[in-house]
Length: 275
Ligand code: GLN
Image 1 (cartoon, helix red, strand yellow):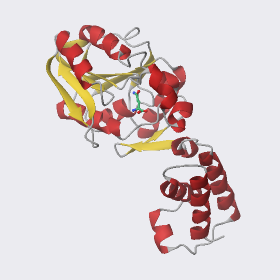
Image 2 (cartoon, rainbow, N blue to C red):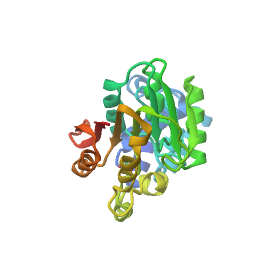
Image 3 (cartoon, protein in one colour):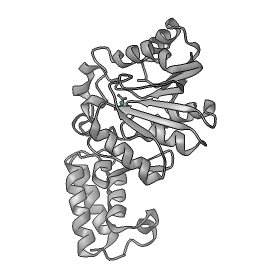
Image 4 (cartoon, rainbow, N blue to C red):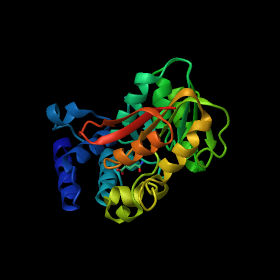
């Protein structure tokens, strides 16, 4: 079958299944199945797809029609220009979280010690290490399976970081220049209303921030001071409507220069302050 024809078939199947980004997803899955790039559809639509490639593509389309996230089908997500392996044990890295990494990078100097709480795939910590020199990184997570994915990502990217199983600070030792976290922050009551891809395929423990969504921020803000050098900084990703509460909690605990920053959609996404 011809490349453009099989692409259109995939688009129709995804549309019928109610997949919002049917055009984009069908193209990306076809490129993954055939080892092609964006130009192929534009310039070589008459290219003959082999039976094996076709079978692989149709399998991907079937999975995506069942609302399995694209990233779980292909096994990776690009973030900060780096490729991260994903698994059902980790939150799929989101473009919004690049805003957090970028804000941290304004303040990150060579040789600093960085702690990433609720590290998941490790995408935040490993991006920071990749774009700095001689920084020392620790990532913690409650999920051993998530830590395995994070360790695999470190090794694939050729980066050295320590990943420890810890309930927030429980098993953390020493002090840091920067503590960063994208903790679970969705209100428990909002979880049933999330997209199926998120609700059914991202780990619940990476999403559920308790009744008011702020439980992890309270705990982290309450304890981070013990783990920060004087003048050290705490950075959070937040939900778009949590900027006021999280920044007030930081100020109330003695943090200075507390700031709320917006993501590329213009929504509050990051809060940070200096201890
Ligand atoms: N940003 C994620 C979402 O909207 C939530 C991530 C989190 O809770 N830390 O699905």
